[in-house]
Picture 1: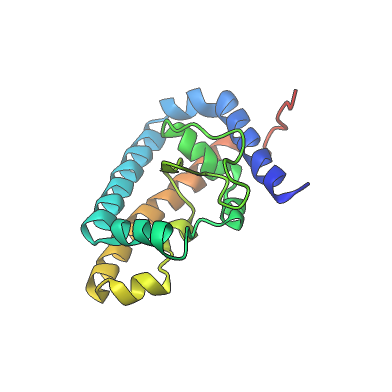
Picture 2: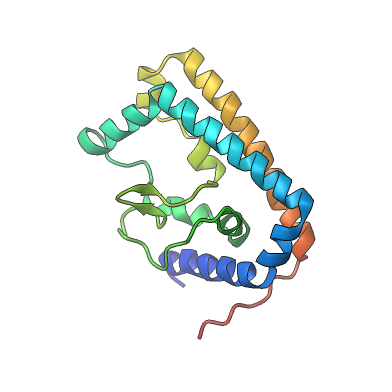
Length: 172
């Protein structure tokens, strides 16, 4: 199985898990609370990225600099549970990559995912470490830490609720 097919397989599996478990998971009070907390923490992280100038710096780098940090291999980090979290947050998952040289989840409008892998949340390239004040980066990582802790708790809760055996998706 090629790497792109491996990511597509995780997307198919996440959609399958959502079809089977989504309704019952969304009725679960503890899960709904965790989803709301996660969504608030994600929003706080995004606001900190904008306020700290990181979004501007990354956009400039993507257009005028090195290009995107969201390389092809980034998508391989995503598993069906993290993708299921995105579905539970109301996101849709792409059926294929828009650019085989970029992350499977990167589009012209940016990342389609709301809940992202730790490497996507925490990555600070040399340019950011050089151009953004250290105090801003520390505050950002503290904010993102709350996001990642909540995401971890949510993923573990989902695994406990759906059990260790994932059903095989129907590829037809």
